[in-house]
Length: 296
Image (tube, rainbow, N blue to C red):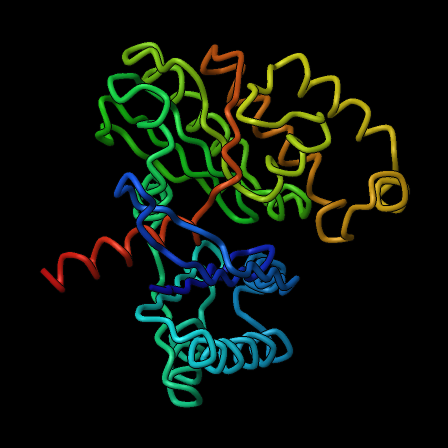
C-alpha cells in the first residue's frame, strides 16, 4: 500500500511518496518511491516580514495542487501535509491554509515543535540501535531546533528552540535563546546521560555525505569541526562550485554545523548518528500505523 507526506519547512518543501509491504519474515518494509524537494523558502518571509508573501504563497498553493494530482496517480491510501516553524510564525498562515483547502481540498496541519520531535521519532531509529539506550534527538531546521531525549523507547524530555539556519543567516537569533538551549542541554544530558546524538535534517545529511561516511558510521565532533572549518573558508559560490551544492544549501550549511557543534559541546556528546530520515519519513510511519489500527 502507498502513502504520501509533505513537510512544509522553513527552508524547503519536501514531498515523499512511499510504499509499505511485508517481507518474507513478515516485517514491515518502508520503500521510498519518490522524494521531491522544492526550494520554497517560507522562512525568509515569515522571520523577516512576519508573514508569507504572495509569490511564495502562490508557489506553495501550486505545489499542493500538483501534490493532490500525484496522490491520485500513485493511488495512495493515506496522506498528510504538515507545516513547521515558518507557518507557526507567519501572521497569515490561517488565510494560507484556507486558500489551499478551497483550491484543492488539501488540509495543512501546523505542528507544535514538540509534536515535530514525536513524529520524527516514529522512524524508530533508536530502537534499531539499542531499545534500552538513551539518545538525544536533534533536528535542525531553517527556523527551529528540536531537542528530545528518548530512553527505552519513550520520549522523556523535549523542547523546541527558535534557533534555525535561516534565523542565524539573517541575524535573528537572540543571545538569550542560545543560553536557554545551553541550560536545557546541560541540565538534561547530565541527568539522563544519552549515549549519542541522532541528527536529522537536510543539512546534517549533507554534512554526513561531505564527510564521506555511510552505513550508520558515526560522525565525530572533530570530523564535523574540521569539515566546518573547510566550509567556512569558501564563499557561497565557491561551495556551490566545489561541492556541487544547491544555492539554498550552500548558504545555510555552516550555520547548521555551528548549531550541531554547540549542541555536542554543551551536551558533552562526541558522536552523531545520521540515519538520513526526517519528518516526512516519520509521517509515513504514523500514517501506516493509523491505517493498520483502523482496518483491524
